[in-house]
Length: 315
Figure 1 (cartoon, helix red, strand yellow):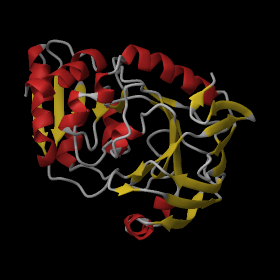
Figure 2 (cartoon, helix red, strand yellow; figure 1 turned 90 degrees about the horizontal axis):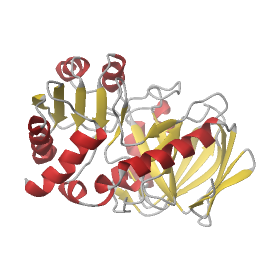
Figure 3 (cartoon, helix red, strand yellow; figure 1 turned 120 degrees about the vertical axis):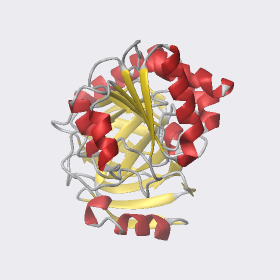
């Protein structure tokens, strides 16, 4: 417990600023129980009123939790969700934030990740860089992403608002991942065109190069070692799962590329796209699935201006 408690105390005290007397809910499932118990202990140390709910393990990222869990989330001041599958892009998370809860989702978090790497970052530093990147995205309309590996993708973000996963969630309604460190935005539906080479990780279990053909904002072709597995995952949901849902840029200097999307998407010198649901952060597609893919060392242009060159930020 001692090693896990260090990361848990950063999450409770620095990231969420939990105060004595606040109602803290920890939502977990059996594989993440030890991490949940460390968060519970850290919250009790600061005097919070704590409760832990261990629900059955879900089946996919973006799947809604049981109604009982969703109801409890809406009545909490602070929610931690160390779960196997992500609750970030769910209506339960959205409604909890609308009710004033501060929510930290921690999908696929491991005990190793609680002890080292991104979770131990200086989150005030992460916050400064993340807000800077988000501001640049907010002021842009057209995005172009290229890599030496073969990514050639364009899409519009006109009228869309960027979101900052800073790791500092102190105000009612704040939410994000822990570990944190990304600025992200929902591409305008129907505008994405080109090819994406995912050469980092994708939905954790899928490693190695995956090639996605994108037309009118939807993936129309999947190639690579794990193409059948990814297509099967998306087909279970249907057409909406193929939506180009998210574009994000990693901003955590402590994050490591470890084959776990939760930390991988926060790595400096990377960007990522996601497929499926974007209804909880400014998009129009509600799909019940959200699948991220990491792109290494991209060159990114916003309205024709280079803001990242081979993975190095130029802002």
